[in-house]
Figure 1: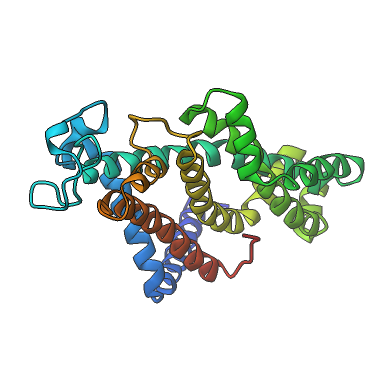
Figure 2: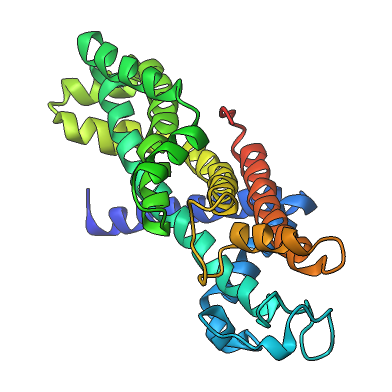
Length: 299
């Protein structure tokens, strides 16, 4: 093929890709709830990243105390009120978002690659390899994530790091099961057989041929999983085995605020709403991506 012909082909392929992305974006934006979910996630990520700048009282995210200003209701100086030691609730929520997003990044950053790799191997090779991997996966799936995380964090020191380890220890299983089911049906497709006949290596077939066909459902599941990870992390913090004071964990803030209900309702209510908005954003975005890619994943 001449250089000029290759250049023309590249331009045609690029134009087709641009058209595909434009159609996909138009289809995505035609669903208002999906766009709202994306907007919520972008806004919260930006607020979390720039929390030291946008928080009214960034020093309140740590060991700061002001007992002359405890449990003040929402006001101009403190839009969401103050907690039991005089810290600004809004500032702590913004920094709490940081911890929640960090938990999501670590858990899914470990669980997704491990699960995808095991799912690829199990689905492609089949036989005893598939049996061993999937029986181990089924065993892990039988353990409720929250109960397992609670057991691990109770055995270890209750910290954010150990909460991350506890949740990540089981999260790979969902992705292993998802990818294995897809690869099992894809391994007999013509493009895989053609790659084998062409002498392509197994890593090439797995990562260059089959893996791209699993990315859409993986992306959808990752987005939906983020909300579940946040809820589990908040639940661990609520019962005292996750984020520890004075760190501004959202679940910890809800738990601390319950001691002052119903009079000083703002601590628990606004912290709970912060969790709700973040989880809702991920779920709305995930539902939009699921409709866009027309895939089904187990939630």
